[in-house]
Image (cartoon, rainbow, N blue to C red):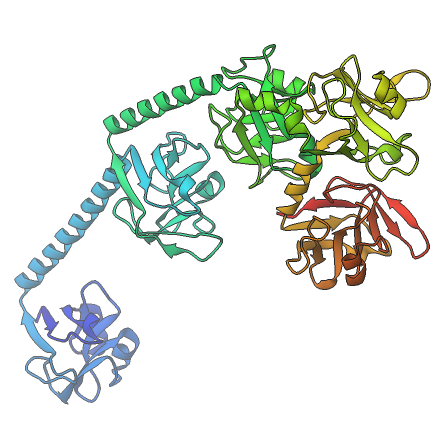
Length: 596
């Protein structure tokens, strides 16, 4: 016989069904007929030494061993017409013509599969754009139109598609054959692990697949709402035109903005918080307004890379990207964006930073006594400077406010004499004694570098100090901030990281998380050191921040191991001193930053 067909069995050995052709080489070795399965040369039908027919692997076939997957129940000279241990198995003879026809059919099917796969590849490569839609969770920013990226296509035999609104987000085929949505690093490496969205199965095309995503850092799970649909060239053109029209409308609307309020940060970047007013000298730049904070050289502007930045005058003029604060994405308007903050570390998203438009009425209110009288201002700068005793919290003094159409503020807790912050007759803000405040002279210990028509000094001023030789010197570190906003910002913090000390109190370094059992205390949060629940960072009754035990925290005393050198509504951006058991020593290396 040229061949046999084994059929009938559908159970666990169904893979052994099929056509077995006479194997000349093995038949010669065994001295009797051996048939090998078509498409799997390691499976054979042979007659064992005991006369029983077996379907066995090559090793057992060559030895004639009576073992294998399926065998006849009796010995016989032919495999035809016998019963098998798998009772539904049937062996029938095939002629040479039938074998040739079977082989031709198999080859034709292989060719069909190859051609179909090639057609599927070409069909997938021909896709110029897709719409990814449906997800409403953490990866909603990855929804949108993805167009073929000519720079990176093809990659792993398929196109790479880039999100039209974010050039750093790609839809790509990973090394394992599945499709992913991820950043450029993942796309170039073909990595699926860590991608924002991943297909459930491998495929040549991103169409008609199920997709998985992860929310809140959880494991990947199927999101049945995610769809990826093909877009025609006409649809892509129409979508781009609509987007351009919307962007142009947004850009024109942004040009009408007169002022912006930036809020949400405390600590190192609090001096960049406040109202930014359209700068008529520098606007427009890159087709958009430049906004300036008070009289400072601090600006919000559209950079050459399309992102919005808050940075100094030189970078604003150059259109440089980056800076102290930068939008996470490019946009024609600074409204409705996410923002990244640089505070000595690589820029990172800050969830509370917000930029909102300020109307003309609101801007006018910013400069009125009615609004300013509701605020308390914190004055901080060099605590080791010549006039360090005048650092602290200044509260509105109702006895003297208003004077010269502005509020007067008095330093809280000052032990030497009454110290006031007032606007002099020439418009400059000064920190001086009572006589100077009443006379309105531009004198005292500190003054603003420029005059201001605002009723409060919290709109962003640069400051100078008196050096005792009838001259004024710039103090670039001295800042005036809205203490009430700082207080509210502190109340929203979930944790802070205390770092930098390597001496006797190094065991108090670490992350302090807001302690719901005690917060707020004296109007501010209490933070407990993680891993040491009886060590707290708290706001003392004197206004300074301390690290101490439970009893000191509850009482609000300054009997502590670590203490800020000045009073403040927030523990960020301060200098600190450390107790060695006998006295407090300044440690300039200690920092306290929000732990996001």
